[in-house]
Image (cartoon, rainbow, N blue to C red):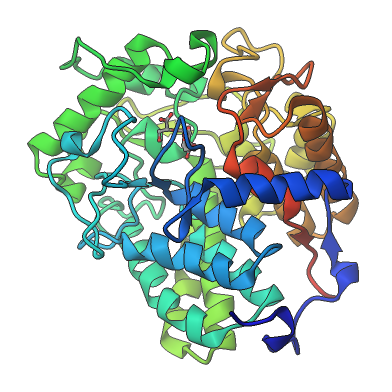
Length: 443
Ligand code: 9WN
């Protein structure tokens, strides 16, 4: 295996440009143990008991933690994710491990879809953060031979999101299932999902074996999730059709901003590797998405989720709007309002960024994406602040991540008032992102 010194460090950011969560040596070793224990066949399961397959944005973010243990393993994580690419170009939200059957819904629900490497995959995607993670890994440990083949995979993925998933040319991908947002039961999806025709009554839920029911989505949520999966399978996962006529169709500002950033990062990396046509195309994509987000920004600078079926905007401040801080071209007004809300306003908590604003009637501090703080959202907001020059804000969020894991352990999410650990145990991205430094751009 290549040693850390064997990488070409000519352009590596100096230590002064890396910001760390303040964890002591024992906690850092513990975080590494979580990743190693959840590692299987070149990728990291989010949690061995609750999520025994490969998830899209989990894997990409977990790769950032692997950098601190083995840069080679970090590249491998992204290669395994890329290996699951669907024939139409998307990276699936789940690539199934054939030996694990303890997750509901399993591969049989998705109508025999297969990724390039032959694994069974789901018919939907998740927040496309992979190209950003590749760029962050490359800037620490540049390995052109490993990075170059991934550029094309990610370009095809982004082309899919701005192609079949952009049928009306709005330049933000149409999100066709709450699971695609990665923030499954967030209150912003309550109204858009209410109209879905229920096709499923019986549920074989396994997710409440290890986690209390009060911390998980409701049965009604699950009937909707499964009904949407059945509706997708009924049309053979015709992605353009689902983006034009599906029962659930939303614009998610968090998803769009993550894509804008990913295109920007793909362009930067392609530039460094001399891949001019990928660079040009990715740059153009980043600008288009950013323009679309700016066009939907309200007078205060917030971009809200939008229900395309009813043509209505959902005005509850949530993690999705906070994540628009990742938009590489976010303007001053947006940066100001988000900085305030995240660090000291309605999304602020001593344990990170809240998934739903404090005090909202639909906020529930224990229930999954309806109130708790998640380390991935907090870390991504920290990286977004750092990219926009707010080093102190980024450091404060990393400090809050450290508070959360000290108080609650390596849990999936955290009570925003008490820091109590909630959801799955030994959760991979909590460990990975507690280890991973945020990168501050050079002068
Ligand atoms: C459905 C794996 C995933 C995360 C999502 C999170 C949760 C799955 C579930 O777990 O979703 O995709 O079964 O609840 O909402 O963000 O990627 O950790």
